[in-house]
Amino acid sequence: MRPPVLNSATKVYIAGHRGLVGSALVRALRRRGLPDPVVATSAELDLRDRAATARFLARESPDVVVLAAARVGGIAANAAQPAEFLSDNLRIQLAVLDAARAQGVPRVLFLGSSCIYPKLAPQPIREDALLTGPLEPTNSAYAIAKIAGIEHVRAVRAQDGLPWISAMPTNLYGPGDNFHPTASHVLPGLLRRFHEARESGAASVVVWGTGTPRREFLHADDAAEACLHLLEHFDGPDPVNVGTGTDVTIAELAGLVAEVVGFTGRVEFDTSKPDGTPRKVLDVGVLRGLGWAPRTGLREGLESTYRWYLESLALPEQRAVRGLEVAQ
Image (cartoon, rainbow, N blue to C red):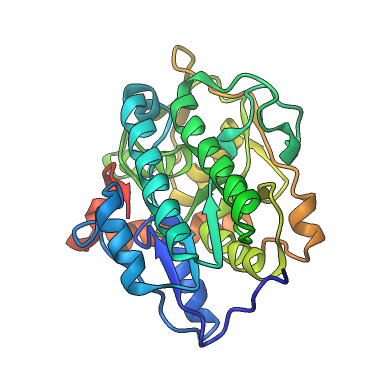
């Protein structure tokens, strides 16, 4: 089946429109001049509620569903609440995907995460590395939930013939990120920590781990454009990596964040804290072969994200982004 072209007649439902990727997808659709997607806040619809989710999908009858809703967090949050990360994400996925299948939604994009791959997968990580080795223990519960989502999509494709697809983004950042002091991912966590150190006049900033792990970072707006590109140009059972194909050490990232924020003190590493996976960079050959490449450089993306963070501090309605929540 030929992938559809998104146009003014396409009804898109974005599950997780207030989250990092979901909000970027709303912006991406607007940049194309397409109609605003169907959305529902967590107060209007708890996606862990199967019956309510089924009623919502039956009423809206979308042509495309993008499942970007998830419980997300950094190493500390994943390690402290593995049961919640496993349960919430499985329930969200089952509710949305089962409801979409019941309605025969012709096109679904399931968004996973690069944490699905084995801890010691060969680098750069190819899509066929999935399920070839043990996971990183600090986020294995979240990863298992996302792997279940990939297999759910594959099962529907095999049984029903629907052209559903999965995308596996690398570490994302940008407007709408979670800047919680302990529950955020590494990049927004560093931005907040260095900002507060600069504001308080602190002499140093402590960064978890040794600083040697290597990570890849993609701006959320680039990730959203990649998702739309996949919806229009890809149809296959295997997940597609979404990233830049380049990485930096955590120490290099910390130095770049310090420059962007204007912090001139010392950067110290707490080696008693976990590093996580030694290196994680994606092989993005499949996506590039489909004609897509990112546009936002890391420094440019950091600068724009920091500007958004500063603006959000003055807006009460934006302060929730600094707390851990289900991105719905």
